[in-house]
Length: 134
Image (cartoon, rainbow, N blue to C red; front, side):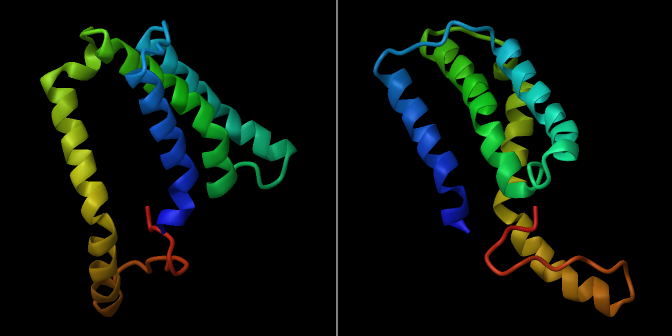
């Protein structure tokens, strides 16, 4: 459901415009990624105190700033002509494979669900209409 992700898309466009106009975040990429990992790890204890904060939507909203910092740090380094871990051939290839899987996973799940249920496999949890399975 594209409207479900419109906020993340707009934040990404805003970050891209900032970098293209010369705004840079002088922060090591590893520190930006660490911030995203820490923010993600804090969602579980926060969900024990504040019900619903760890669900798909709220968790995603709370992760936007942390991922934004990581993305801005990487984009700033790239715009300045820097090189780092994310440029390694294996990491780029893994990113391409991940994107390829992202593009087809919903179709694969929709085909596999009825086939697996017919042959007596594990029950697959159906998703709400318009929501991604992943």
